[in-house]
Image (cartoon, rainbow, N blue to C red; front, side, top):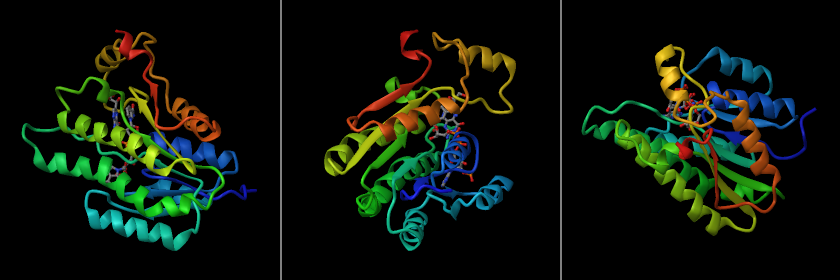
Length: 235
Ligand SMILES: NC(=O)C1=CN([C@@H]2O[C@H](COP(=O)(O)OP(=O)(O)OC[C@H]3O[C@@H](n4cnc5c(N)ncnc54)[C@H](OP(=O)(O)O)[C@@H]3O)[C@@H](O)[C@H]2O)C=CC1
Ligand SMILES: Nc1nc2c(c(=O)[nH]1)N=C([C@H](O)[C@@H](O)CO)CN2
């Protein structure tokens, strides 16, 4: 039986960390809405589980505004908005197209969705916005300059929206590092990547669900960043 609380919106819920967290919320009787960009078997699976799945591409402002209209048409209230959708593309020198796309997905989309959907969150007795950023913003990235800059913009949205939406809505960041590898990551890459943290593991997506659960359940945390990086900052 689904809880009688308002649904949680998680963007980019059709694979990897987002898909895992959606399934864990469902297992705890939490109703869910997701955005997805590409149709996948996992989206059909989530529909069968009762998830309202909305196709959206945040690379353009119109795509973001179309998504917002679909959210408002579907529900009068939201328990939380989890901004998980992300574009992690390699940059070839002065790649303004990659820069603009990642800025739209990581900054413009959360900005517009938060501004237009705050009223839906205010219908819920407990309300949260959670931005999924990246520990990389702590130091920047020589190889992914535009990606890191766009995630730094997302980090800053947390501070502004936390101040603007208090006390009704809490706003926080989760800053992960190396949670899941990719199928084409070879053993040498995995060794190098895990050596960057003092805990030296690749934990898998459950640590992100645990982090989401903490931020949703605690009443006295806002405007902060929960770093989930295996102690990378200690190396
Ligand atoms: N995986 C990790 O180890 C780490 C992850 N993170 C962050 O955690 C979050 C989840 O990571 P992960 O699961 O690996 O992310 P993914 O790379 O799997 O991206 C999540 C989803 O974002 C969607 N997306 C991509 N571009 C767009 C777009 N233009 N419009 C709308 N949706 C889009 C994708 O949809 P589709 O598949 O349909 O294209 C994808 O399913 C991300 O914010 C990521 O930056 C941070 C550090 C480490
Ligand atoms: N949108 C994404 N962002 C990130 C990913 C990903 O797969 N999608 N992966 C990482 C990893 O930590 C990478 O840095 C090491 O494999 C970072 N961000």
